[in-house]
Image (cartoon, rainbow, N blue to C red; front, top):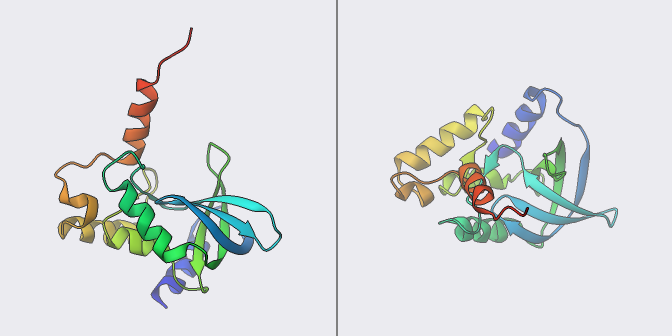
Length: 162
């Protein structure tokens, strides 16, 4: 019930929030916050979870985040409220399992996700901070590298072609 109420509140509080809802089955978990969904319309959708960012697969705890999301969501029928697209064209959305279970809460509670770099949801910040205070997941490390910093570092390390 807590997750459903949070979901409803977020849909009312986020400016420009899309009301487009789709449903389907999660067929692949790509990483800790990205899944591939086959919609009821037989279209394929790549969905990035809105409001959180998990360690990349090359980072410590990236595999654990993917494993937890897989346990929660893989091969399950879900509903998705789309929230637009990210800069790479991926759908960004809120995924609910059985209409009420929001996997973002479990990822944050387990210490396997950061809140978004920009405009973090305050409720998510509180959950993240509790996990951090309790030394859960990636918060076992003294200074874990946020995934957005890791991605920037990886981009800088790529060989530039002339």
